[in-house]
Length: 160
Image (tube, rainbow, N blue to C red; front, side):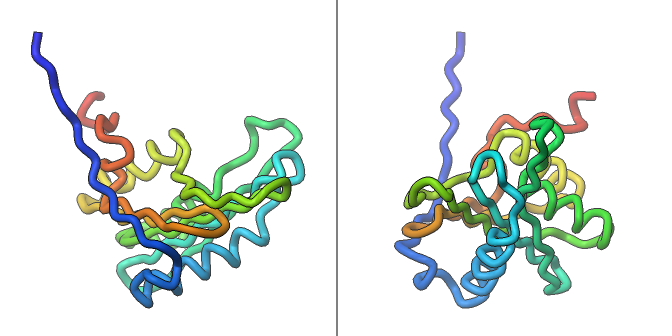
């Protein structure tokens, strides 16, 4: 038997104000997108903003549905919008923020597993990492330089 150790390296910023200016702008766009989320069931609003290699910023927010599996997370809405509208663009950075209508979320909230898998697909497709910045409604912001930091054993097309 052989043991394998997997390490994750993340950066933690004390607040949005301590982020680089361009990332502050990206997070502000994600916060704006979050406020337009359609979350009548969970009351958990999520906003995402993706900066493309062209400088264009693509937004997404969670879209719920009474048939729960039919809803879609903010990260996937933004990534799929980017893929459909700008098919040759490189996704460079993503900002992600959440807000609950039931309580204050003060801890950084990362993408769910399904969104991690989708973002991994985009990293493999474009052969370059996507830096992901995530936060709650307030407080610290965490940066992962690549989705591989959040999903180290990715499933990709090399297994097919």
